[in-house]
Image (cartoon, rainbow, N blue to C red; front, side, top):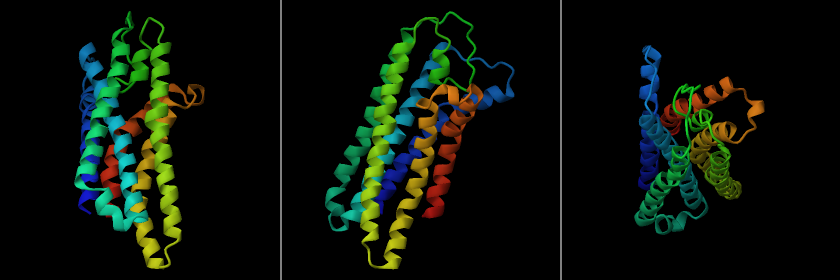
Length: 239
């Protein structure tokens, strides 16, 4: 229980930081006529937004592995998921997330922006900012796509593998009450994974022709604002 709370605490910190990176400025723009943001804060917003998004992906994968060990190897749980192991997994997730996003920021900083300097979005979203560049952004878009493969599809596959093994273990439980408790343990995490990865994949990996720009903006808003709000509700109600 303590280790589960440790990962939930990390997820809560990610969600609070994630929303705080763009929501205050977005709310200020809604009540103000002066809807401007300078270049450096915009780049910082992109960096923090993507770093916390990457961190959430990795924390969710770590949580799925934690559930896998707890259900499939309960007697070895305290040995496999020791405090040292959990701390290393959490710190690695945070450090890797913040370092990996530096590549995207470096590619944006090398681009010239000639104008018009109007971002067609609620905040400085990287794809919307790239549209303002007056140079070829193909490299940046390729890097974003490759990052999505490793940060979205890779972790999602690991989560699905973990839950396939978990489902197999649950179905072997003889007790009906035991199966119910096992499913209950995993259902909240599966809801969060589905919401987070589903919306992110649609935004960054689905063909743009299938999703008009206004629809992309609404999906980004859901991904960045409502997901962090829903996570505490989902986990609190399930717990």
